[in-house]
Amino acid sequence: MKGKYLITTDNWFLAPDGKQYKAIWGDVEIIEDYFLGVKTNRNSSNWFAKISGNTLHVIIAGCQIHYAIQCNNKPHDDFTEDWSSDYKDILLANKVPGIYIRPSMIYIPD
Image (cartoon, rainbow, N blue to C red; front, side, top):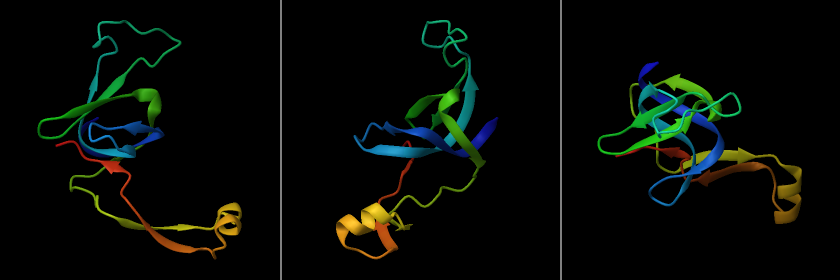
């Protein structure tokens, strides 16, 4: 796996900008399991993905990668539309199901 990918993760992660994200985009390189100086075993992730931008990179454990979509062009990373039909949220907020605007969940390392 080499090239630019949009990677979605199983859990939220904190990025250097202090925000939480659920996905990351950049150049992907699969790296060895002992790059931190610790040899992993069968009870832990045994491979990692390095996702790089121009100057920063993020390391994600292979077991946290949910989807990997080859994506050569930078994805939309500004505010975006989303929708909700969660009955509990609608009832508590006294709202109807619909579309709303939210920040992007994609981290793009610089």
